[in-house]
Image 1 (cartoon, rainbow, N blue to C red):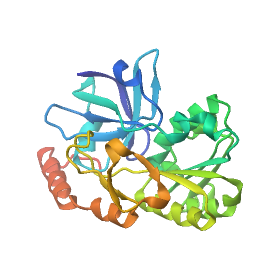
Image 2 (tube, rainbow, N blue to C red; image 1 turned 135 degrees about the horizontal axis):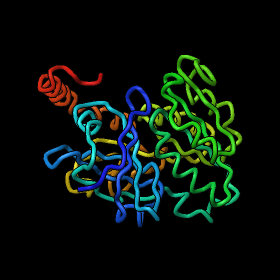
Image 3 (spheres, rainbow, N blue to C red; image 1 turned 180 degrees about the vertical axis):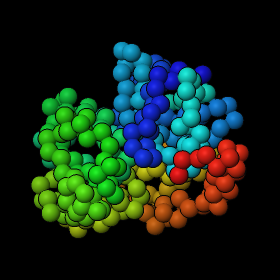
Image 4 (cartoon, rainbow, N blue to C red; image 1 turned 90 degrees about the vertical axis):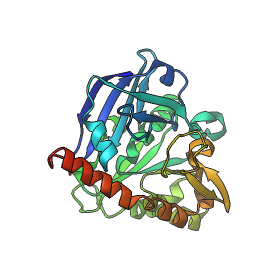
Amino acid sequence: MYKVIYNKRISSNSFEMMVEAPLVVEKCIPGQFVIVMAKEDSERIPLTIYDYDKKKGTLTLIYQMIGASTEELTTMEGEIFAVVGPLGNGNEICANPEEFKGKRICYVAGGVGIAPVYPQVKYLHDLGFDIDVIYGSRNVELLLIRDKIEKVVHKIRYATDDGSFGTKGFVTDILEKYINDYDIVVAIGPVIMMKNVVGVTKKYGVKTIVSMNPLMVDGSGMCGACRCEIEGKPKFACIDGPEFDGFQVDFELALKRMNIYKEEEQEKWEMMKKRLGGEVHE
């Protein structure tokens, strides 16, 4: 069991949870993830590491309440059953900073994708990098951790679908306007957003790293649920990723695989609502 220090709502459907997990944070690198289980019989939920304190042994996660399993996670207080990790590979730039000195780097984040972007930008900022960020969401209320990210970036540009903050439109609108300012783009967020970012960067030949977030079960490569096609070859996001060369990802397949269990998830969602008498956050 892992002690939950806090588990709080930070927007209409996003939550921040801090747990004690000293063995996890001891060796973690920005870009890696963990798998959490609320209870012993709960589903495994993969979450990218958002923040950590190696001295205190604390791990902070941001997650979105989008289904029955994450709804259950929002109710956890005191302790949760499991936190497994760190899993996957660290960000390429953070793992090899000397190779990228002098490169002009821009991170593009969509929605809760800002959570995995933050530790990478913070890590590079501490090493002396000047990193730009383009951050988009549906509206201003869904722009998370603005105060924290603004402290570690060189420049940040915002986009909202409804124009309630920053540029009205999409992150790709801003990216295309400033694409000639960058040598490398790192995109983290919804698959469709990353696909569209690659659509821009590919036209200009700008190296692009994307972080894939497919369906995942065990996190060790045994189940095969997180299979992606990279340059026509099968790879597993949990052990080969989660980051890949954006030009090599088959995004159409990734989008199709995300919808495999939609009916089962809806059925579980309805069962949970019935069990709780309809008192489920929607």
